[in-house]
Length: 176
Picture 1 (cartoon, one colour):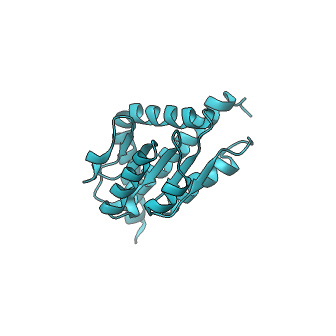
Picture 2 (cartoon, one colour):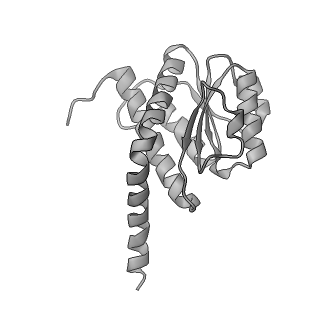
């Protein structure tokens, strides 16, 4: 039977979540503050990097687990041109690099900096282009040999981040 193999996926994901929970706490807090600061300052979040980027923008615009006004977020193509056209000082780039080639990710980071934008980078193991990140950027690196496990953690991180944004903007939700 394949049941043990199927169960192993759950165990592997749970193990990785346990391993990264503490080390990612501080950078996740920094990412949350950057997002809230951007949004409350009139900026927008530009997301890039595949399905997770589109999901991020959708959660921000449409809401997560409760109703709220839409937040300014937009998914852009993985190319510096739309970033240069749409990005302004004070905006924030949420970059999901798991499906981007390193040169493309680095070009996006550099273009964001050219627009006086900070970057929150969701990555696997420390990316080759990490030297392009500025002190004001946030690196959320999940080191694992399987890309699927990294994406699973990124999805949870994204949900936690959007939940944190909602709490910061709207306060705690009353328990049902």
